[in-house]
Image (cartoon, rainbow, N blue to C red; front, side, top):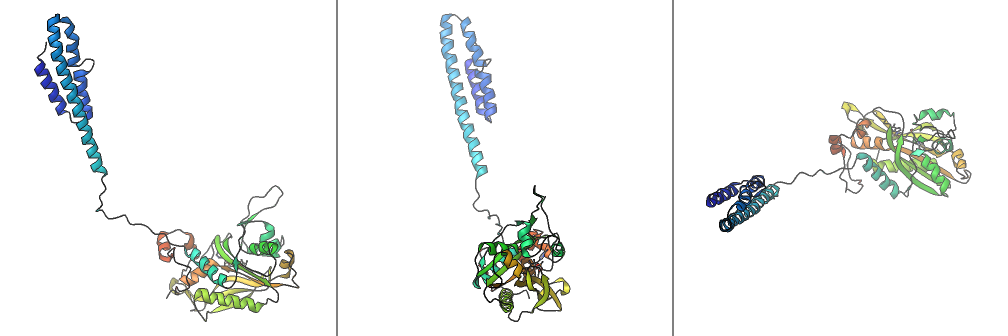
Length: 358
Ligand code: FA5
């Protein structure tokens, strides 16, 4: 029988020297596994005579127990070391500076819509809504633009695929269909505004394929063009925060209003910047007029009893002028530098105290 003291010392030394759980398991297999050194000695006990077997058996069992206990103790110690290392790696260093947090800003379109609603709301207009995918009747026909009418070509329309009945819906080309939907469902007097998106196949410095308008409709008895002018002038002075705003009504044509005008604001574009109220240029911000009797009749409102005015202003054009943004296409490029420069703090109440760009 091998020298058991030597064997025990060898194995306990190997257990103590195991640096990780894998190394420790190798020692365990070499000692106690199926072909381990202790196991082999156990198998050899049977060849000894009974007295020698008893003594050798007891000695061998002591070695086996000592080695097994040492392995268990070392295993526990190695697991503790591994846990300590993991905890040390995961530790939170409270002295590190916090990561910078990005704060979102309101897009100038949202800010302008908020401001327009605040001012027109104060004047007594309520907000109305309509679908962006509109039928031909509400976008054109009820607005006195029958099929084949040349005015349909003024709106570079996005058409949806033809339905089974041959009709084709459109992406609304303006917010004016909300006028029709409101007149269909509401008894006069009416005072609504409809801010929202509109779509036209158009793109240059002052046009984008998707843009926003705010529509206004007022229907009452004895409403006249003076009301329309006064309302628009008061709105523009409040929005642009300028008392003697250089604004002009330019005679124009819309099939759904008569008479009709376009509203222009004086501006300059010198040096690539847009400035309101200076220079000899004009930027159109919207169209307006007295609601055409045919439109009232299509909505079952008697034009002999009621009159009304309506206007539709381009939100981006209003923002361009107020904040000096020269190219409308930049509104929708999602450039973070642009958004940071022109954006507004989200929790700011729609404000009228913001000054014009110098
Ligand atoms: C209209 O859309 C009429 N519905 C406005 C109206 C309403 C007239 C009620 C009378 C009564 P117009 O096509 O001119 O009109 O557009 C009105 C304004 O929308 C323009 O002055 C401009 O400010 C803005 N606009 C039109 N097309 C675009 C575009 N592609 N991109 C950006 N803004 C646009």
